Amino acid sequence: MANTLELRPLTARSVVLSTLLGLHPPRIGARQAVRVGELFGIAEGTIRVALSRMVASGDLVQDEKGRYELTDRLRNRQTRQDESRFPRTRPWDGTWEIAVITAERRSPAERAALRQAMSALRLAELREGTWLRPANLSRPGRPEIVQRQCTFLEGRPERDPAALAAVLWDLDAWTATAGDLRAALDQADTLAEQFTVSAAVLRHLLRDPLLPPPLLHSGWPGPGLREHYERFEAAFERLLSEHIFA
Image (cartoon, rainbow, N blue to C red; front, side, top):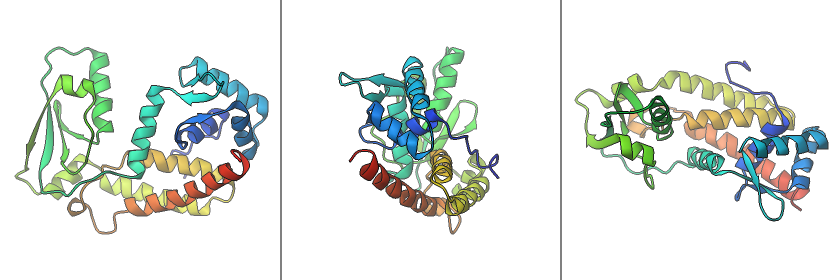
């Protein structure tokens, strides 16, 4: 089960990173980080070494007061994570957004960065050079690398849109994993187990295509999985408020 759910070992780095990703603003003092580590039985020295390594690797920076903050790259991840928890959608009129790659010369690095950006925008690749999704998401804008390499159009498919969505996204697999994660979160007894499963839930929510209801089967588990996660998150925030940031 652990392998299929992509449960990752609980480490000092994962505890610090997951805690910061849940904080707004994502900032924590060294002593506070140590106290969070204590909740999971992680020694002070291990947490402090993790903090130093995360600064060296570009995951964290220190402000003028010595507090640790996420770098811009991980702040972007926090934004995507927040959007996956609280999707910003709009009424769907059947229109799809279509991105066609029109840049003629692209380096391998640019190709890889574009693919990552398109996935973050929850577009799916119909064929090489063509990405699309239902136009039901409210976005403040698109990344510069996407704007530079793509031309965006709007249209409606001639085929059944639900059938097209099923081709673009493996909805059955997403549903099955969501059910397993929900059960795992219910069955987790210790804080460490709950924390590990909740991190896997967040990773899974990042892969939710956020399709409009007409394209989803009855009983789509996305909302239920979010509700389960938010209950854990609320309990963990209370714990931090009472014992770490008091």
